Figure 1 (spheres, rainbow, N blue to C red):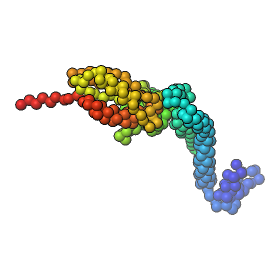
Figure 2: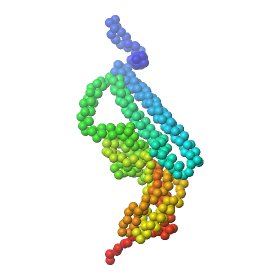
Figure 3: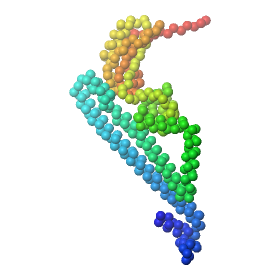
Figure 4: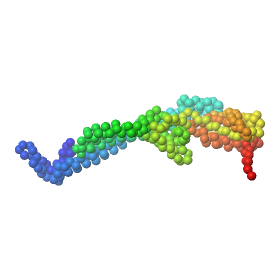
Length: 336
């Protein structure tokens, strides 16, 4: 390259040739030795390659991010259009028709699609960038080593042989890597979704090519290898069911309790937007020697049932206490 020729002449000087075309010395320049000049030129080349790589990866990251943002923007516009349609329908329809419409949207043309796409776009863009960056840096390192006159062919060949040997001891790593790719591109779960993995319930905070990080409501983190995930309960897809169980003493008359629960379900009104349909009384679900368990349910958006359960349970318990119903009495036996 002309640039490197100029740099070499600046460091070593202009070569002096004899009649046969051989270099007999150098004139001018800094009078660097050939080895030192090669080292300086290789270092300058390495710095230039690193800077160009950083600039290239910066634009790659921007391109990936912009592509995902365009996709999210389309879904956002669609969501805004649906929201305007829902507001218009709320003015023109009664409550039963509104709930039917909302349930249909959740299952078919989900109003939460924008949220899901946003989470998945974040996951895919981050992982795609990491893969591209790893490949680019590998190529750059090989080019830089070649610039230092280091023969990379034996290194690559040796790495291939060592890689085969290491692969037998790195089967778990390969398994984690492949499982991570499938989890991401099959959209098994996304960042921000509530999941249960191996009995641990929490929110997905990060999905990597090797591990997945989940945080529960107490702040504890579960970091699990992707290859160890064989069963996933995703609580953030479709609708959730809020289940409210209340225990009453078995001395209560079941028919009176049933009537009280039915009345509560008919009269209960809530401004909570997470309540998608009226309360439904399921019935008597369990009986013991001291108690009866009664159940009330309703539908909520994905992973939004816990807060609504607490709200309804407080109102239901206050209602039952006002009606004179009592909970089960516990008997404590003390041995003298």
